Length: 113
Image 1 (spheres, rainbow, N blue to C red):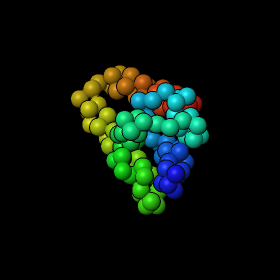
Image 2 (image 1 turned 90 degrees about the horizontal axis):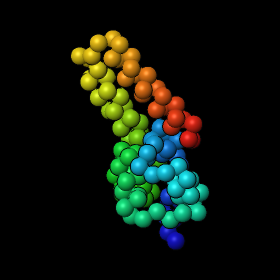
Image 3 (image 1 turned 180 degrees about the vertical axis):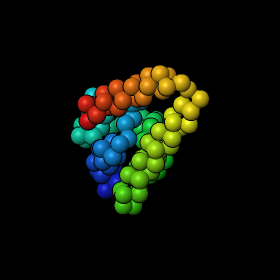
Image 4 (image 1 turned 45 degrees about the vertical axis):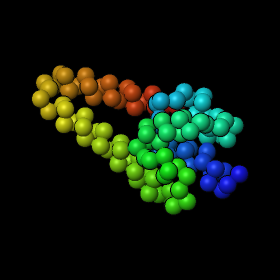
């Protein structure tokens, strides 16, 4: 097995820890992948990469993972900026409901880590 494939579980774990959360996969499946007990299909890797906001080839790159962590953070920030932009025409109670929902979702993802 190549060094890139051996490093894949740890790389995925680090990207998720940096704030990426591929909700496209079950928590147990992600746990198996991250522990090296499961071997994801190419389609699963594409879905994970897309959910993390990176390209599939980045998951196998020998580049320093810091660039990937920044890509995940940038994708998260783009999402938040989109939410804020869409909230501008909303009333204050509507904004409060949206933010409350986002906080609840974020809390659930934090619990999964």
